[in-house]
Image (tube, rainbow, N blue to C red):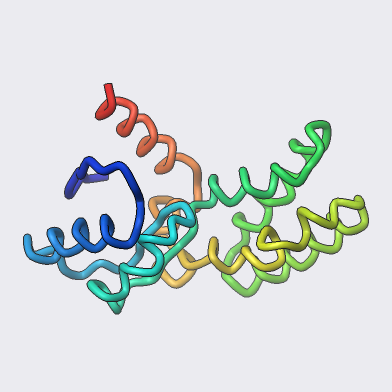
Length: 160
């Protein structure tokens, strides 16, 4: 992992992300293939203006946390295992198929809110963009929690 830029800001709005992305572009950053982030609308709405060839992926860890808000505490571990099984598939088609199975199982468990909303059923595609990358990049793309954990630790150090 390499840090390309750090910017202090009070908001993650479109204007802040425009300034950040413009600076990266002006410094010569090219060839960006994938943005991995939480569902920060300022970035999601904006990156294609500067990097139209890039795809966006919702951070899997943030996605899981959103699902868990709709799950009783006693069932979080079981649901976590189900979600991780989606992202452990060999390709995007298999992952989408597994996601459909998970949605049905969540409904059978009477966890309808977790199954629907913008959570699993509507949001799963946002977490599968890394499958468009070569398989050797999947581990680094944010599909696994390792890169996210390293990123979070780095951010704590910067804040400190």
